[in-house]
Image (tube, rainbow, N blue to C red):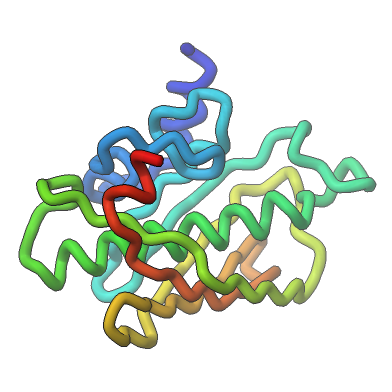
Length: 169
């Protein structure tokens, strides 16, 4: 538990508001769920109209080469950042606090990832997201992942608003 708390605290952007994920009730997602203590612990906040997150990789997040971040982890980070940004955007547009009733949940409908260059494992990564489209229940978020001052990957996350029954399953 202490390791999870240390990881979670290290993934916060200094001086930012409470992360989206910490305001969502019962979020057990492996990438971003504050209730999943074995997960990645992604923490996203607003920076003006963009969402931002800083995440610190560990040695176990390596690809084949031990100094490169695994592509699946990169895709998960981009996906979770995009979906959580869509959720936070929906709450903001409704003028409500994240996590207030009734809950709002989105799920990934389409995820397109473009890997631009290897991502070093020994540096924090920064994720940035921008909502680029809102049509009915669908929100599109363009995300990028940066490390060492270079864009390493980018994604388009098309998230769809899902009913309460989706979560309760």
